[in-house]
Length: 377
Image (cartoon, rainbow, N blue to C red; front, side, top):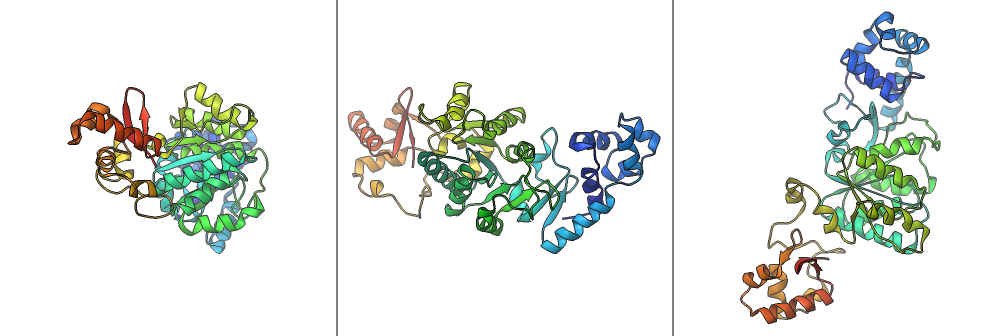
């Protein structure tokens, strides 16, 4: 995944006092990372750089470090994807300050797939862990990549849910790939890398310093079509991810929680501010553009994937013929008005209403405002 320009992108990340935004300004001015290193000292200073920074770049600072990083990454069988590479995730390129390069362990191609970020507290309730696990599994079964931060708590539950749903997941680290944090998630990281990817913008050997995590959060949201907050206390870093998602023009979703729980403050507050309330996978998918939904949802009439394996659920197996007819007339990707349902089946309206009530009580469908009905898991 490396090309001739990769060392220059890595080198800029090693220049003290430059930063990602400063590097982007230089690249915009000169056209490419190699061109920055070909600029004269006068040209560099004219960009508003502090004298020590301009002098360091003119002296080719960072290139030796970049070569060492490339050698170490190759030895560890990591890939390095520079911003100029065709393999760089297209959604991440759209954010204001994309990483100059990504260190990748696993499948680089998964970074370009449709994804949903799921994050939350490191100290979840049993409810939060359960909801995160199930929702991640359900979304992963719909071919959405689950993006999270490999942290304890909700992040770990989301990664595990995606894996158990036979889907793919991406873990974004706040440290170098070779400095895994937390250490107890090593086996989880290994499983993620087998089918998905573990990534970082931080050079190899970087320790998990507290200031790194807010920085990496922009990658979590930047890789995804939207961000789901499951549980988050008032000052949780997950709320930073939600704010970044809004700045990046991404969708923001939140799972409601018990109002007496401190961990419910974040999602409940976001819902009051306009975030989409989520209690099942379709609440997330229905907010995406039609072109995305078409790729994620099965054709009308095709069987829906069922958590834990194929085949109908026990409820579906026990339906009467009339209930089955009404159930099959409903869709999981679009709510239907009751009159439309009646027109789609050869049953009197009272029998249709009775069947809808039974299906709703059995948890197979959900009634939305205005007598609209939609399938649910």
